[in-house]
Amino acid sequence: MSDIYRSQFRMPFALFEKLKAEAGKAGRSVNAELVGRLERSLTDSSNDLDVRIIFEALERLSLRNPELRYSFGVNLGSQLDERPAEIEGGHWTLAVNPGSAAADTYLKQNPDLLQKKA
Image (cartoon, rainbow, N blue to C red; front, side, top):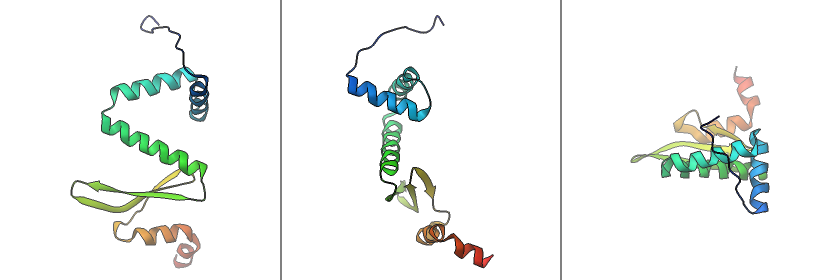
């Protein structure tokens, strides 16, 4: 453990409570949560960090508002990926068939239609 720097940091109590709640959701200690967040913010490229922040924000919104579905498209160079990534109730999905994302979503919402065809 000689490569570990022991310290005591001060932070606003409200910030500590948020950190503690996020650590609890992730199933780890406050210290592990703090170290992980610091490592990510200091080692990731800015694009990677920004994308992670967007995904985490969408996950929080989805869990807070389970009746809503959030979706977005991905621009791969000059071509827009037609498969919308969606998050609903904290779960990510990606349409299987790029040509019929709406049909995939409809079939997912009505699984009994698939059973009748089989």
